[in-house]
Image (cartoon, rainbow, N blue to C red; front, side):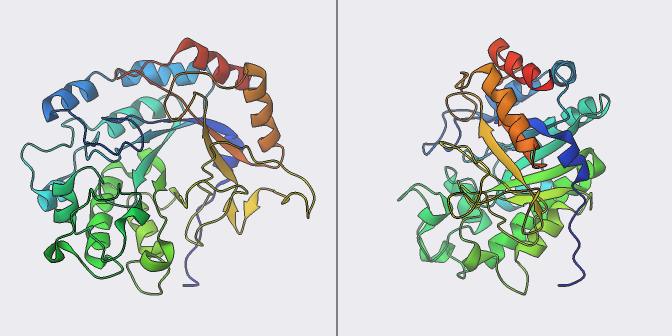
Length: 334
């Protein structure tokens, strides 16, 4: 294990802040199957104007942005032959267009780095994919964030406690994307890594190390984070992550002196300090929930200990950002 080296996060620290977009077929963390056809999804993905969105980011001085590949619905915004080969659905729920690759190209031209969001488990509102991917644990699947009673429970679909077969297939799916995008994608944010002691904290693969290696297959300099859920103070979830996932909802981390406050700095057990929260009322919702001055001041506050802040904001299906949100993001740069 000693030969593993974390990626250099100096560029991330120097960026100070960036944006995060939930581009999904349904609402974030939705627990109901979405009423959507592959054709409608493809037309939606095709409508995203990557050049306009990248120009918008450049105009406000945004150094990096995250884009979700997909989440609970099983609709993803990039094709993947490995995934389709395993799941076998026709027509596929994966878009024809590689939105990640197209957006990466548009951002790279403007000096903006693209990172991606993906989940640690199969899409929980897509039983067909869950069974095919073997993401059916012998323990309570609610621990994965699956809605209770909504996942397949047939004994024939279950695997070992560690979900070894699922993890191997999931890593293969991720590896295909990583190899395709190469150095155009600069990092990954993995949601739902909640059952770490059962699934990932093992000396042999599959584990955190093999998961991280799949994401770095196409770009060894990619930075990786595993989300343990909302935690304040922010924690490092694994020695194989390069920065903290830092999901924050109702409270914002602050610095201070023990025992009243946990002191913070650039590093959390060797991982770059980073937080992710939303500008709107919730993930990808309109808003804003903060004043313009507070957004800028809090970003500077986290930057003061060399931390990084990612701000989630809504976009329309074709990639437009609300004016009120743009004003707040532009205020950070000012």
